[in-house]
Length: 211
Image (cartoon, rainbow, N blue to C red; front, top):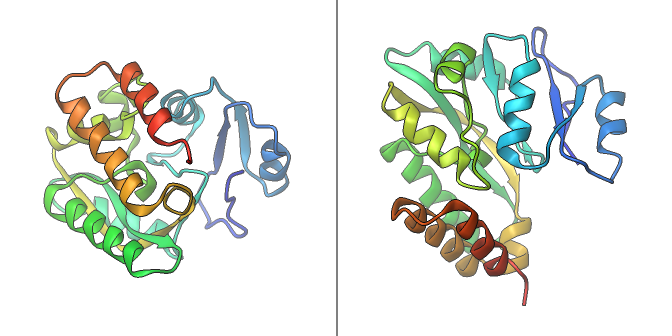
């Protein structure tokens, strides 16, 4: 179920692209004032279809298990106003205790800042015209955020906003920190080696099954 903002800043449009949920996502989102569309299942499809109906000049892609920080709208505009910046994302905080999760956060934020490679759970944002020029998210069963950021880096700089989003610790709690990290890295390496994305998606589902 999406985390819909209780108080949406002026000028911010909220679009929820629902891929066939059965947990009252659509009803709850509408009750909070969001525009809800029914989308083809799959993250790339849902994000592209949401972007297609959005009317703003800046797009932010927020996963359902992630919360934005206060003042996110100003942070986005300030980040995109930097010279050479074509897109951005937020630092990552994981909503869970333990030193292991702090190490994950440290690694994610280090990678994001120095390699300009944030992932989708960091709430990627960019100007709508840039998104359209790149053709949106690639039609992939996974790694769509990774590939979009790779394409963005060829156009300009991908900056990290000074504030942090908070994402659920569900994956790390269910599978364990080492197994989750290993699964993610196997997917990245496999994708860069040219392994077929549908095959990677099948591997990821098997790796992601709790034991």
